Length: 360
Image 1 (spheres, rainbow, N blue to C red):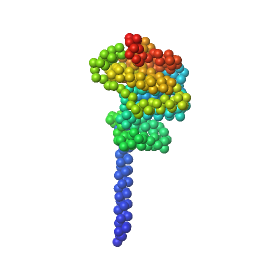
Image 2: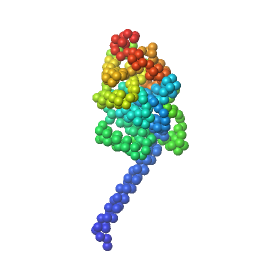
Image 3: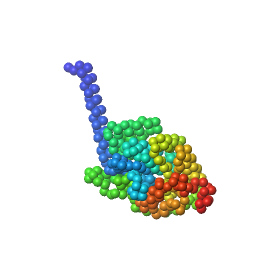
Image 4: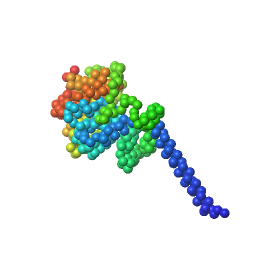
């Protein structure tokens, strides 16, 4: 006859076995869903993989997909002799931009960073952009050692801005945020070990080419921006307190580490369709004043003298992202810009109402 202790022990073993089975099924189900739903080579993974493969770099570009599609390092390098790489990713916030540039300094010894600011992202709190950051952290972790990757994931999940939000949990289930519902394509590419269509994939320098040409839905030029803004209820951009602090930290970091930092906003065809003109000028001035406190400037390419730079509307793949032709034009300008005297380059930009009136 079994003793009560023996019966209790057997019951505990069964419970432990059930729990272990449940965990195993849960882990296997998560792995299966990742295999089916995650794309084979997402853009963020290609960025980190390409970056890790580089042996010599002196310059990196960080920012959102506008920079990913708008800066071709090969064009810049051929004109300047630099060795650069595009580390921009989709909806990359300042936290991730800062992480990318620090990694480039620590791992590659780079001496120049071009930080491309996105108006919408600068107006957004970090926790509200968590899906983009989850993809960034996941891609970074998958190109590192297991221990370093786990450390990065834990750092994100337990960061003060993220802990307690859904992102601290969903991070561990990549198929939720890193997804493509073209399951057949996902599986076929993973089994074959090759992408079926190069469109949407990066080259060896981190640049994403695209030959699509957008239709012009009625873009507002700068000379018409003020009157258009008066007649329409447009978004008023702002630099949040948290992003102001992050930008200050980036400026301090680059100055203390001998890194030349260029802070820019890239051309976007729809800027004056979207943003209140006065608020946009005020947003630009606030960032420019912050940069000036650290001995540099903010170069907003949507407020540049059109005789110096203008990207025609047929050189965009959509309302805010340049296509390959536009990227070639902008990258050639960027090469000239980076080698110009900073004060001379700054004179190409027209930020005030009076400067705007003088320009037009």
